Image (tube, rainbow, N blue to C red):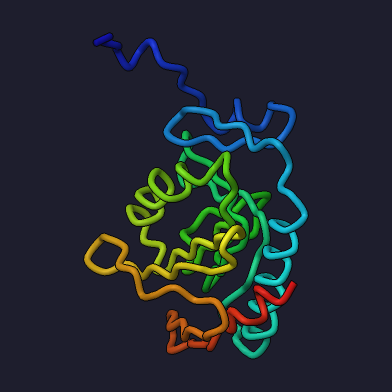
Length: 182
């Protein structure tokens, strides 16, 4: 078995990230290429998620739905979830600097492991209340809710709805039927 030292691993920060060409995520100083570009089904599902979120949040003055925005967790971690909801948005910069309340990730073969494991831990550590993994191959979504620092599966959804309960008594019923109607 090979041993390695952390100082041998690459370690980049937000300034480095800004200078890179193409689409990247930076997680704990390690860069991850976001390629190839998502396929048509992936993009269509993400669009449907955004439309449903926008429709359901139109009366909420505190929450905002955003597609593919950079979330700068700290100086060595920048991720770009497929869709998210942020409540009480504080500073509007070129990136999001506060934890979202909800994150949707549409899975792809090249990122499935990272989304299911690595990002799940990252999002839980940073207080993201709901994490939703959307599986295009089976056309279903898994909804996880943060409880005592860990995600607990609330269920798998295809045509059902789920009620998200956010800050300031903001809640809304989200229809997965609308997401998978492609």
